[in-house]
Image (tube, rainbow, N blue to C red; front, top):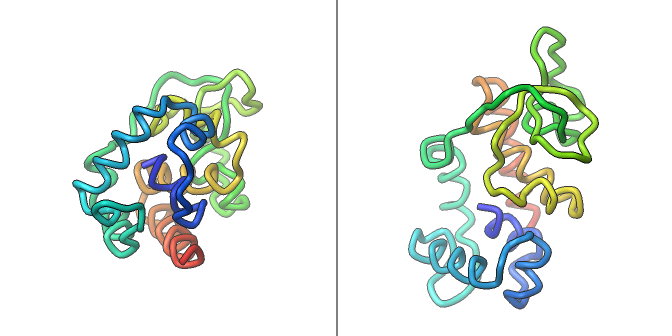
Length: 164
């Protein structure tokens, strides 16, 4: 998913695997394998990097929370994600619950730790605001209640459409 989001952000440019891998904190072979899996899953066109946008939207709406269920961990200091992330602009402030965070040494918020989609996701997100927005919105779909999921899916649909 992190590779697919990066492809979308880069507007399907043919970034060299090494550069994409470096920006995402992965190896070039992991990036290459991810592209192959995305092609097999028909989320990008076979033999290329063209994103099948409708398939991606459908996967986010109906499949992501089943294939990549959110796992919460112990409270920790980290980077806000899901509805606590800046992309939601405070729309879901709930003082009764700790905010969801990716545990990270550069984090400034104490909250309920959420395992990210990919281990280097928080670091990559700190270096790319658009990637941070995508990953936080995906976490809201994976973790949220109906209201947060609906808002996240609307924002994701707009981001996917704005990029193509």
